[in-house]
Each structure stands twice: as C-alpha cells, then as structure tokens.
Length: 356
Image (cartoon, rainbow, N blue to C red; front, side, top):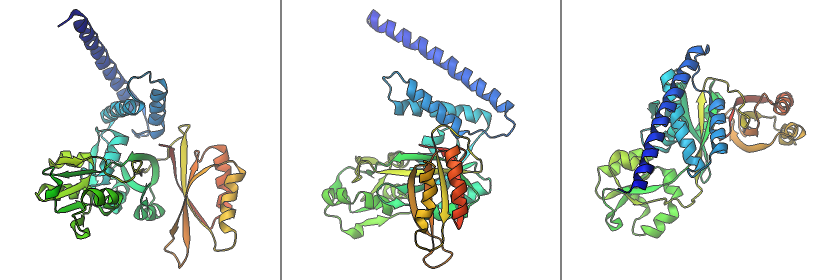
C-alpha cells in the first residue's frame, strides 16, 4: 500500500469517527427536545422540510441533493425513533410503491403497518392503530386515485404532507430468458403503464397472459411460485421475493410519477413552501365555477390542481378538489378562503403541509 493511499484512508477513518460522534450528539439533543415537548407530537413535517431544504442549499457536492436528502431523512428517522416509536400505515403488502413512498418520507426507523386496502389505511389511522398513513392520490400517467379522493371527503383526518415518487417498473422472474415466460402478473395500473414495452419485447404473449394482481408485491409473490411467470413491480419486490431482474425501467413514460399523501390528526405549521388542499362544491348555476375561483385570483393565490369528482349526494352533483400554493394561515390564502367560504355551498379544508 502506498503512503499516499494510507494517508487518505487514515483521513477517512478520522472523519468517520467525527461523524459518529456528531450523529450521536444530534440524537442526544433530539432526546432532550422530546422531553421538553408538551404536546407529545414527534413528527414535525414543517421542521423536517426546513432542515432538508437547508441541507440541499448548503450541499457543496460531490454527493447529489437527492442522496443528501435521503441521508438526512434516515438520520432524522433514527432520532425520531429515540423520542418515541412511530407507526405508519400504507397500502400493502411489503414491496409496494406505497411502502417505498412511506420509507422515502419517514425513513426506515418506523413500525410499518401494511394494509389490505386504501380504506384500511384510513381506518387504521382514524382508530389510532397507526400514527400516520400514506395513500396514493394521483399518477402522472393514469390520473387521480378515486377511492382516496372519496375517502378524503368523508374522513376527519387531515393531510400532513405529500410525496412525489418516480415510479420505475421492473420485469422480474425466476430466470432471465423472456422466451420462457408465458404469463405476467401485475397490478392493472402497472400493466397499463408498460403497455408499449410489453408489445415490443414480448409480442408472443396474448392479452389473456397479462394477469391482474391485487398489488405489485402480490404479483411478485405469485411469480416466485411459478417458473413460467414474470411480474412487473418495483425493485424492492424483487429483493423481498428473491426474483431476478429481467429488464429495468420498462414504464412507457420515463417521467411517470405517483403523488402520495400523508394523512394524520395534526395541523401542520407553515414551512415557508407549502400547499393547502381543499374540497368545495357549488350550486349548479351558470358561472358558478368562475365565482369559486375568483377570490383566488383577486388575492394572488396560485392554484396547482383542480379535479372534479361526483359528490354521491345527487345526480350530476360534483365536488372539486383544489390544491393552492401557500399555507392557510398566510394572509392572502386566508383572505381568499374567507371569501370562498361565503360563496361555496360546501367547503372542507383538507390541510396545509410542506410542498414536496
């Protein structure tokens, strides 16, 4: 070993020792914060968003901002766990994109609560069986997740955060020879997202060979028990079920992204870069939608999403899901909401939370 190499490794060892001491010191301070808190609330999305934004801004490289954010998410996750164990419900089983979204937001130092359905995620959080839930709300290719939107209308829970998860699909099987594959298991949405790739690369498969599964993780489990089958799922599912990756990133849209919401029971303070989500309805009359949106324009509030959904209270009656830029306590947003409340037949604020 050259003297120069030895010196570099000695420097790395010394830095590792310093990092260990600093992380341990941070964890000790987090424990002290936990003792001082009166509310007992451990997860502060606005505070964590500010920390991650500062780390990205001060990042000198060469590590990317994405990986810096991942690193500090895990550090905060470990520190949170020292204050109080935290449980997070998501659409299971393990190996789904919902689990991946939960881990991206909360880190690995959580108690995972996989649920059989989106309804179960809501019920689990409403009953205090889990502290928070993670549910999909829209996909850039396939559109809104109707069941989540319907439940947001009914639930007493609030939105505490959002997660933007790039969705990369993998073809996995017990072997890599595509000519030996006679059927593919996957969730219907994933099959739709990979339609063109499947047509180009597995033209011998009839449509009947594309078999719907309740989740991508369940698809991977079925492929693990069937030598002639493959599954389309996320990379974590291949690891969990011992499958070999046959092809990577087979989604037709390379920018395919799913947006998830964090649901819970706490109101979130402003972080400096926030969203406010709400549901409104109006009487069925000419110009009603314009009247609803007019206060937003008058007070300079930007709208990032407008989605209609049947209200289920009457034929051809609709509610509108709206995402605004800003926190509901911001002066301009508060003024717009006050006017909107006077004009709308129904208004429910789902929550203000840090924008992803």
